[in-house]
Amino acid sequence: MYRDTFGSFEEDSNSKPLSEINMIPLIDVMLVLLILFIITAPLFTPHAIKIDLPQASSQESPDKPNNIALAIDNKGGLFWNDERIDDKELAIRLAKAAQTIPQPELHLHADKKTQYQKLASIMSIAQKAGITRMGFVTKAD
Image (cartoon, rainbow, N blue to C red; front, top):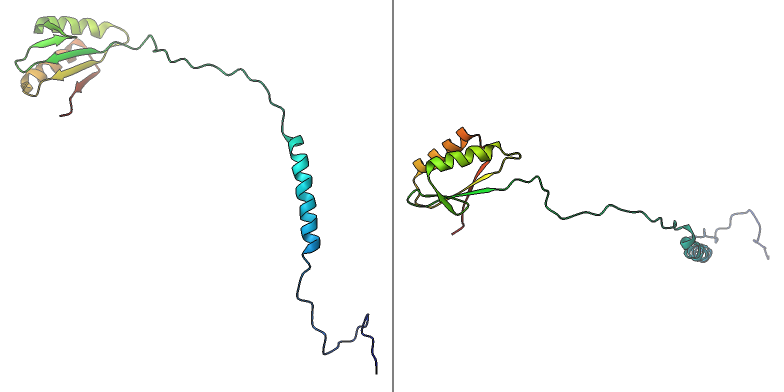
C-alpha cells in the first residue's frame, strides 16, 4: 500500500524533527546590510567646523618673584646671590625683600660643616624680617 505523507498531519514513526537551521538566507541578508552600511556610512559624517582655538604662550609670568639665594660657607660667611655680606646687611636686605610684592622665596644653601646655631640665627632673622617662604637647597652626593 502506497501512502503519500506529503502534506499529511499524521505522525509517522519514521519521521524525525528537522534539527538544522538553514543559514544561507541569514548570511545573504547580513552581507547585503554590510554593503549598504559601507556605502552609506560616509554620508553620515558631520561636516567640519572651523574653530579658532586660543593659543598658549610659554612666556614666564611677570609677577613671579625672584628667588634669593643665600649661601652659608663652613665658617659662617654669608653670600647674597654670590655677593658677600655680613649679618647686619642680611637683616636690612631681608626686610626690603619682605616688603616687595610678590614676596621672593629665600633659598638657603648651607655647607655640610655649617653649625646649626648659624642656620637657626639666619632663620630667626628671616622670620623677624617678615619672610614667609624659605627653603633649603641640598646637593646629592
